[in-house]
Length: 149
Image (cartoon, rainbow, N blue to C red):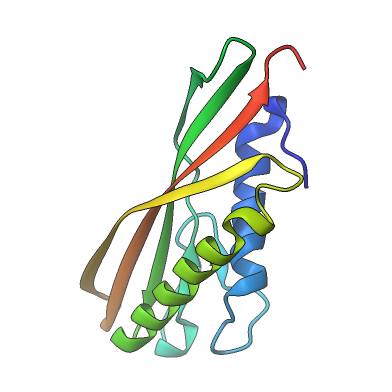
C-alpha cells in the first residue's frame, strides 16, 4: 500500500495496523481486537482482553536531502491484557513483526522504514474491578519522499 503525502497520517497508520494484524495472532481468535483508541464499549470480563491500541501517530516533517523530505513518526503500540505473561508474549510478537518486516514489507512499495525501538513501558491498574496489565512499545518510523513528486 503506497503512502501519499496528502493522506500520510491515515496511510501510515494503516501500514502499521496491517503489519500487526498480519503478524500478531489474537490468542482468542477474534477478528476485531486492534483499535485506534481504547474501546468505548463497556468491558465487564477478562474475556474481552487482550486488546492492542495503535493511537494516532505524532510526527514531524524535515528536510532529508536537497530533493527529498522525510516525516519522522513515533509509533506507540499499546497492549492491554488481564494476564501479565500475555502482555510480554504479545510485546515479543509485535517487536518481532517490526524487526522481521522492517525491510521486507515496509521498505518495498510504500517507503516507510521502521528505524528503531525507542522504549517499552509497563504498568498495571484496575479497570472495572479487573486487574489490567499494560505495555507500550514506542517505535520510530521514517517516510522519505521526493519533493514535488
